[in-house]
Length: 72
Image (cartoon, rainbow, N blue to C red; front, side, top):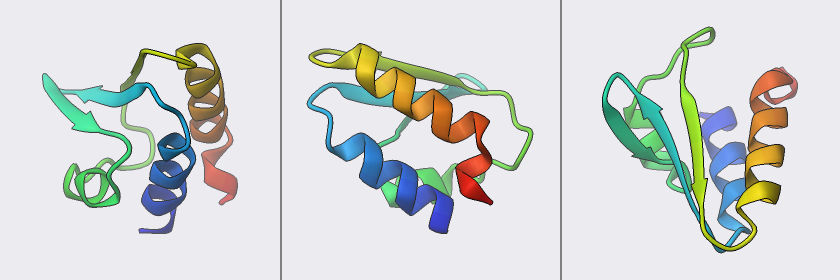
């Protein structure tokens, strides 16, 4: 739960929409509950999509967090 909470909190500070695409599903990456409900496991291939104001900054931070394993 901690990675989902940390990620949703970090993405929540950006005004753009932030979504994770997985198996044809779109997950609101600003919602801790949606991230937990998606049951994404370590090593799962996803696509991070940011659309709107400050999308490049959100994408860069989100990608870095995912690549770094949320510090775990």
